[in-house]
Length: 327
Image 1: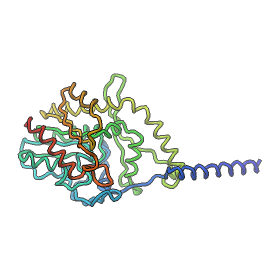
Image 2: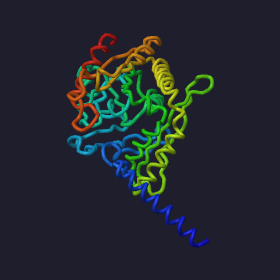
Image 3: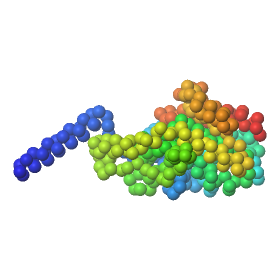
Image 4: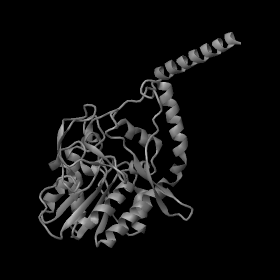
């Protein structure tokens, strides 16, 4: 009996070693952490998941994607766009890293550049790296009442917000990579579901599972991935409903504060279809600005998928051309 047990344990151990070896040969590697970029200055928020620390920061580029750059976060949590000069002429910008300006210094973000086109307006850039539409909605709800009579709200949209809104396993995995081993920052996100009455329900913070030995074993990392896919897969079917209803809520908040919402498509590729989004916004009388760049490579940071200074320059001009007709 003892001999059989030893044989069983040996076969199981060898099988696991073989699976580990096979997965590594196939390119499936253990998980790793990437403590660089804005994650290095992110702090936990019990409702939103995270926000950027106030102060002046020098940010190192991610994986050699570009030069280090300076970022200034004001006391109210917005990124610097110049001095606040006016009592009741303000524009609020919300969205993810494309709006926040990841990869470029303060003065090269589209929100900062937009201020030069609209010098008589304060511009509050509340874009936060990694944010979804859901997080932007919750942030706007908190911040809009603190600003005196904002006239315009700009929501900078990219396609990936659709996946973030429902906390897809792939996105939770990406967020976990930007944690660090010292537990200073473990990203978790609120996400949206559609209930039986077709209403948007915002669920509290969720994060990726962390199985023991995930950083040293490809097999453990693979099991973890399958587990996360299984528990999040049902959300996918409602991803567009969650997006549209989130935008509806942003529009309601804007209207209740006498502000006009503009949804701006910031995709770095004109070839990406905006048909569904455009049709929905048009049907619901929400203003849409198509600022998809005419090409991809020219407007992005080297070895990265964020817009470079040319991309932000393009966005600011594109947005201004539409806004000036409404101001």
